[in-house]
Image 1 (cartoon, rainbow, N blue to C red):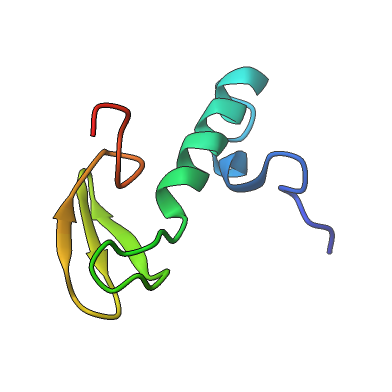
Image 2 (cartoon, helix red, strand yellow):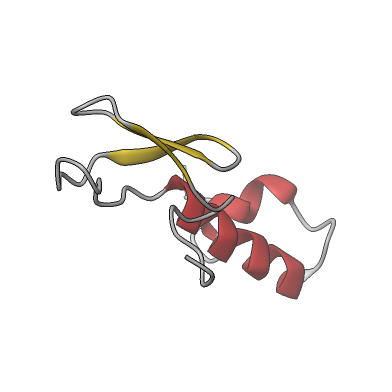
Length: 76
């Protein structure tokens, strides 16, 4: 069986509904929010997004408030 989302990645779940450019933008944003980041307290790369604006370290358990898609935004 072939891989169906080779070109579009995680945004393949939207199918052909929204057009190529919007799916590429969704892909960029979803990859940002699902990535692991460096925890500011323990310096481990275990910081994950739990909900919009809330980030939790899986190692030390620290919770921080940040951006919706990244832990830090341009204004921080």
